[in-house]
Length: 456
Image 1 (cartoon, rainbow, N blue to C red):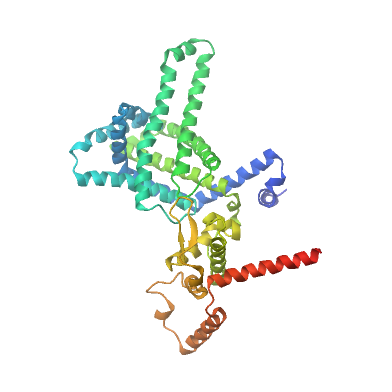
Image 2: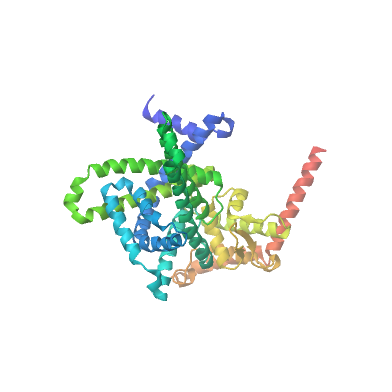
């Protein structure tokens, strides 16, 4: 069997087979291979790496303010002394450089005295923290194919809750693990034959589960969409395994990187820290990608990657979208989210986003304010003209500087375009979205009656 034949057979097994018809372990294996291949494709395309680089830059600006805010919160609970051990544990793969880096960061944080800061400086401190969280959300939203982010009020409340509650949860878990290993019962069990190894592995497993739990919390809360817990957990497990592997590889790299210290001198710790930070953010985004594909397995295929839409495809999607939104509103059915529309029309969410945005900008549809954002007509159905829908979708990519009116043309072309527009207007006339909904209902009733007659 040649390599080409092997790849063709492998592609047929992975993409043409139906996992639902396979035995349990085979179905799980094919689904996971699809998810990992799709995630690897995202990494190879370069967008995850670019977002990771952007997060490195933002982190360098926000790390000290973030720790200062968290330090102030932890100080109120009397556990601020755990900041340094946590940083030492986090920077453990950096070896001696990690200890040096921890000392510098703690020194910076100690110098940030919130009491003596002015009001403007305090506002800037919190703004820097919120900016970091907004950058993380933007990166995860891009992975989840979500274009809209939270509004300013939601960012303040939800981001600060993560910054304030997150450290408390993390240090509680770390403190619980440490107390078990240092308690009298733990020491007594460790002294017994066989139990020492058991406690060692139990500590490793507990540490791994804490990382998985923290990542699951991030994957559920940060993206501006509803993430299923199982999908977030799957991405967290993959990211935690990569985190452990990264720590092991980085430790070996640091052990053999004495030349870096000789070449870069005092800058070596900064360069090594930036490389470690980049890999950490990349792992976090890889876990996000795994969560997305686990929740949307239909998007793992290369055929589902939307690059562009033709004009007539946008026009048809726009009418179908408005019809479905109008029907759910008119008949008081379950309101449709972006994912609901995607499943209803069997269209990728990216394609829908390209059409929904101009419809929103023209004031034809609106979104509800809760997290599960549903689409509603912006006004009553009888006041939404089909001509307005058509014009909104056709002019989606136009701007004030680039549109047909500003383009040099020819009288013959202008007459032809005017004739086409007149034909469209004559066809649409003054029909409204309500007319389209009623026509669709009548067509369905006619089809149902015909099926009943045929069965009789």
